[in-house]
Length: 538
Ligand code: GLC
Image (cartoon, rainbow, N blue to C red; front, side, top):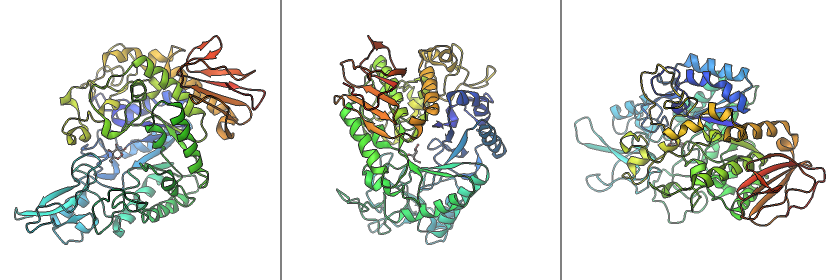
């Protein structure tokens, strides 16, 4: 079980309103009590924060707002002493425009060796004022920004698949390959047990810079999932395998074709990758069942563990999403003021938590989901920092709503996020309603989301059938996801309206909601231990 920490918003140790490594160190007992195996830290490096830290200016230094490199090493060791490993986030597709390489490239001018590490290109048309391609940025808008020459005249354009402050690196350049293998080793040498690879499918570009075809075939997209990319990850795997202790490579791969996705998980490439297929699907029995089947089928031939996650720092919080009429997730669909039913969302998020915790493979939990936090959708517009918001012209609320600083204790903001004598307010405002959702309040309540997560993770850890047992669907109606793990465990999730009978003779281990006359209610999950394997579930 891997827990994702977005350091800016987890816990603020020094009272400046921004989360930091001291805050994480102070809250390690929360993570130990939750029963996690590893932490994935989103970028903690020096960054101008044009994209919440995914614009890295120095991959070998901690941002002073978070702490120091020495403190990161202490944190890694302290977590390890509690049985918790550390996964760091490496961003290979692009760097910050403040990074020394890009500054040198701008200064050196067209045709320079410094520029060849990026995608600088003259514009089209006689004056070069038409950008080289019409590719669309992952944050909306164009993917090219024009530079200005030393004499003030308009210069070359450079490529950025995200914001203009995130120039793309040229992965055909040996310096780039060497540099990142070195960055990997830098963090492995400091005790990191794994690397989360940002935007892992985007690194290689077609150097002829064609337009994106209407329906690109496999490997035909000019900037996504190109076949040459696997060579990069074979090199990374060799770095990981050169260590005596296990080092994991985890890919962020937004690739709809699960067969193409699984190619990254071949034995000499990445160990595992985020399952966004499941994450994006709505709360609907047949649809989720299809995703589970596709996921297991895609991972089997490469013998890699599937992953299950309900959210991360980029997507809408589950309790908000699952309370909506359309509970699927898609970046382009994000809008302000989409109604949600919080009670329904809460019930379904609880049921979903047990569902994913029962599936075979690794489980990722985004900070605050264990508290059942909702997406903060009424942030004042002048506090929003996410480039996705700005680049959509304000139509998209952006991703800050899932990045609001966590509520730990007390009755009012900062809810223990910052110490009592803090000099600044949390960097994003926390809603007053979170007084009921603090970790402190929930720890004392056996019916809380936190208690559910703690119980679920404790059972998952203790039951060999959950960790290593096989998986088999049990007969059920389409709106019920009922399956067996190993010989002894049954998990049932009821996505329909009709209560479901428990497995015959089953002993209830945990349920996400109350049982009605012993039957599993709508939008609830339960786990049972069974003595009669193969029992029918109606
Ligand atoms: C990944 C990150 C996201 C970031 C983007 C660009 O998708 O998860 O937060 O904005 O890459 O680095």
